[in-house]
Amino acid sequence: MFQKSTVFAVAAVLGLSATPAAAQSGMDAFFENTVVMSTADGAEIRLIINSDNTYSGSAGDGATISGTWELVDGQTCFTRVEPEPLDPVCDNYADKAVGDSWEGTMADGTAVTMTLVEGR
Image (cartoon, rainbow, N blue to C red; front, side, top):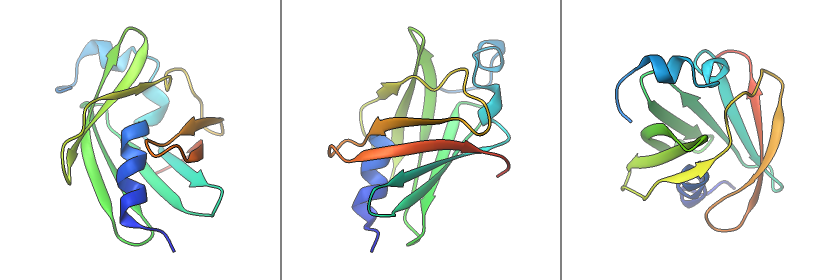
């Protein structure tokens, strides 16, 4: 069963107001679509990344997260605000297209596959 702590850790693998920089950042494909994060044990988290530099996520068990994102030195840095704040964690999200998958690691060391899927 998917644990709420897992969705909180996922947010760590992963601001402010909409700006032309955000719109031209290579993040455009994320703004109308969803990042599905899957672990080897079948847990799934759905992340919504918005053009106003916010994000939110939910898991099948009802756990939710939210925060902000910004571009720093070519990396997309996510800062979780809810349920409790975490320091920013940066990764390369830019220039992905719907259907792309890439590997990442959660804060607890768990491997995760991220896929950008069409729609919200």
